[in-house]
Image: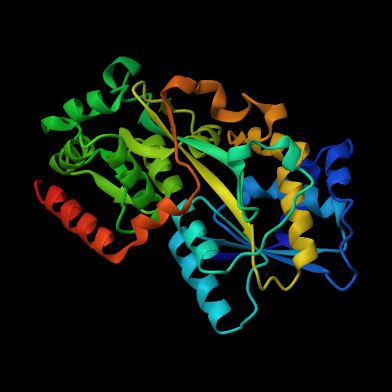
Length: 354
């Protein structure tokens, strides 16, 4: 999915903005944006309906900066950004994505620049990697189900229970959904991280195959399929997205697995060749400000600021059972050609059990 979103698209949402001022954001915006930088280009996977208030708030602080927002899924975003940079074509100032492995590859390959944020004192130490990767929000990976078609007692509440639930084909054939790790980097990241926690993940995969599961590249489509009753259960989807979509489709139920919960991060970086570097740094500061973090928390995302601990979907988590995916070069192993080829081979074998 690829769609250009100009700031003009968001102006109709100005009525959703805070009536009061944004004091901390104004403090963070103290870094002046030169008059010559009257634009900002952001590539992200953050859906426009969720981003509207955020970009409108930034526009209020910096009315002279025209924000051009490109909504692109993770793999195409990475490939487009790299290709544009290699050809010395105009590209993004800021790349904001949940594909943590691809973000680390961009940094490792020299596509990012170090940035010093004024909001660093308020952020968790784990939220910044070498001054280049900034975690903007964290997000647990959850199960979802249709509350009209299944009771809470009927759905599995752990990965072990899920493997048993899927072991024998039954009334849920064709009614279970999951990420397709061969079609989306987010799906690949989550499956590989599950495998690091337990090899039982392959039992779940074979169970998905036996139940004729449907695989998706976009979390929102998966969540809506469950909410509409086209499916009854979803494995490994994004918790904040599920809570946000549930505002429109109340039949969506959310299960935080009781044995362990993967927690991934939506990270942002500033391009080394950013056409508007000052505007990009100010925008990063804005994303980490208390006001912007509170706003994202209202959409279910968990802020990284230490003074907002517990906000967002963190309310649902038991810290003892969380498996936070750490930023770092170890994430690059998923992108190694031999590792990826072996995973794809094993995945196809497991799926052929159907």
